[in-house]
Image 1 (cartoon, rainbow, N blue to C red):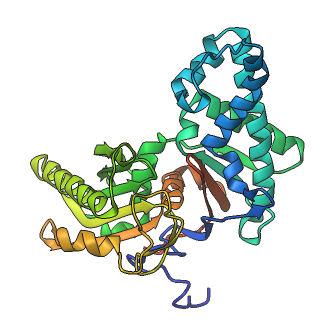
Image 2: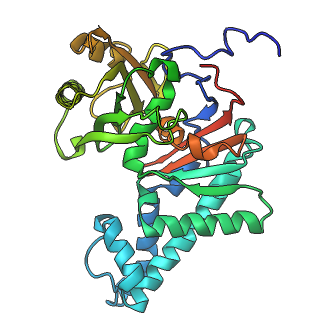
Length: 356
């Protein structure tokens, strides 16, 4: 094998890194446009609600909408799942119609993605995000895979194994080489979203599995900043409070933390940890050239376990996808689509041997 150049070697603690210990990140936050806007937005949670509304409209005009006066946007995942399973035939039929339309749309979106050079030869796609955490989401993924197979696309669709909320934390452990985690019991992890910020402790359990397949969430906390009138500085202050609370939990439980905070955040992440674009759903301006989340955290939490705090930030879809790494070893090239407020995306190539 030839000597790797500096650009091909994994950089320890690089933000938004292209080369990670176990994968190369071929693409993330891909934005494809057509005449109607971003293609990915057509396969988002809000797009599904719009499809549900479309199928309700003819019956609503007749005063016979079986879903009543509740707007589609107000229906929770559990309520929609219940309509599908236990609702009267008309209500279930509306949900089925929306699922079929969404599946056709997701099929079209995937076809567009795999035409892009960085997504070519994709062998499997993991479906994650909040939409996956519902029976409706599972059915939509299953139907989309049937459409792919019928059209001779040799692409497997996999449902993310961990709960999407936990996956956004678990993947953070894959951002750094395993030797950085050895001798420690866990790391701090953060998943920043347009509505929620979740922080917690990932117990790595390396003695049980070096590939982190046995990693678990030791403790976590969720803050719904979308329910409050929060500005950026207030959100960062609350996040730092959450991290401090989990450091205290680890100390109380005698859990030795590695001096690392792994963070998944929307948008394109520059090497210095600043956000180039894509953070428009976060409270305040996170894309300012004068704002750096990693610096803010290190300033307020300079030490963890007596060692200098390191912070690693990457795109949230990348981090959620990384949680699936132990299950994706049979593939060389695979991607992740996180269906939520928007359509997060990332494409990976497995490295045959992690050079950590």
